[in-house]
Length: 217
Image (cartoon, rainbow, N blue to C red; front, side, top):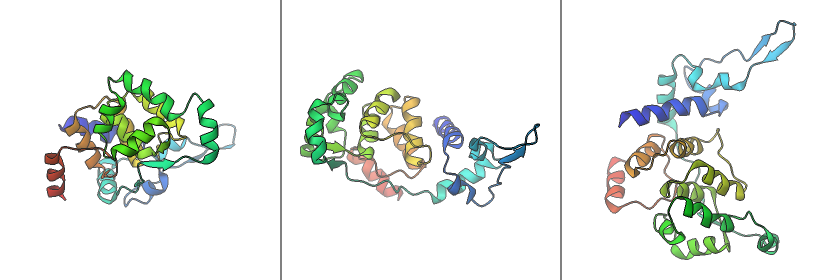
């Protein structure tokens, strides 16, 4: 069990790029981001030198980061569609509702089976599927996880709503890792989310799993 968590930590250290939060960690050593090139000009190094995987004490720093991490990504699962979009959407090919069926077929799901795995009221999910409501980012990420989507399908659905995997967002980096590495086992998935205190994804869990989660708090 610890192997996949170690792999997640390694991925997170190499990918997460909120340098304001990283540099604020006690013990973080600010690297030299500017240097003098051979031609005498001042050159800026790639900002990736500031990531945790470049730190000598990365394990210690990551432990501090996790201890203070909190999920700040709460949103409702849906958003109302602006009037202008209601007019334009029937002519658009790349709306979420039009792209969803193919994404679900690719992972062996239907709108009905996917909705049963999401913590959202069925009436709202049906409206999202029909295109009369927009899904928020949290819902799309949860959908990708519970349906075991390939990363390409997840990116397609995110892009349809103007979203993307943000390397400065803890939730996004962890979900990106899970999808890229095909972590489909619910227990492993939930353990990875818990490791980074990600609690706001609307994933429907079995009553026993919810009870264990509350007992851990």
